[in-house]
Amino acid sequence: MPLEAPVEVMLAASAGNVLVWVVWVVAALALLSSGIAVVLFTNPFYSALSLIGNLASLAVLYLLLSGEFVAGAQVIVYAGAIVIMFVFVLAYLGGRADAPWAGGPTLQAAAAVVAAAAIALEVIVVIALAAGDQLSDTAEVTGAFGSPAEIGDLFLSDHLLAFEATSIVLLVAAVGGVILGSAMPQRSKAGAD
Amino acid sequence: MLGPGIAAYLILSVVLFATGAFGVLIRRSPLIILLALELMLNAGNLALIAFSRQLGNGDGQIFALTVMVVAAAEAVLGLGLIVAVSRKRVELDVDKLTTLSG
Image (cartoon, rainbow over all chains, first blue to last red; front, side, top):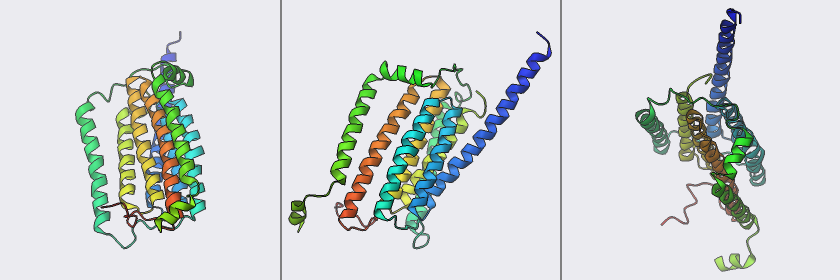
């Protein structure tokens, strides 16, 4: 084994580290800016579109945390299904503009800023107090961690009940969506009058 | 682990959660409130997956996938409710939908 091999390995590792940092910073900035865009866009259609950017940058972060299957499921379930559903409903309802700061800065807006900042501070303080000293040591994981095979194994062994309950939840949601979305029967309208 | 530690992911998750909570509090359109709720659920998912990676335990990812399913169900029912309300020719504004309040 030549002597310079470990140095090369170290150099490659640090280059990989820099690359991961760059990807992380880009994904984090995209995550936060698209999250703020979702909240502040006047046009709900743009809000739904920025949610796609939010979900995509989250998927990148999941990949960095070696959650390959969750990242894929995130893109398919959220960007592929949920956002499309939002866009369909927006198209159906006409997507009226709704300015977040309509009527100037009100007491409600100021209270919302304070409440959101309080939630953030509270969670950061609690996590720092409860787990601050354990956050630096991260477990070593193998390449199989987070792979579809391991997720499937966990779902069909330790978490079988959650897996089966999930199917019932989805069935109930589908039936409820059909009932809510179908036209109201005529007699309920007559009863209301 | 390459790149930033778990604490950086957690701070990101907290800031995203606060953004979503701010959106729920500030917006009046129920559609945007649902979108902001999705932001909050995603922030929770990010924290779950970060802790899962830190502990080297796949259970957190299972939890995150279950949260995703619940988020899909919640979006279906929420959008169904919004469509049902809009059929009644009521303005979609959570400050004005006060029929059920005491």
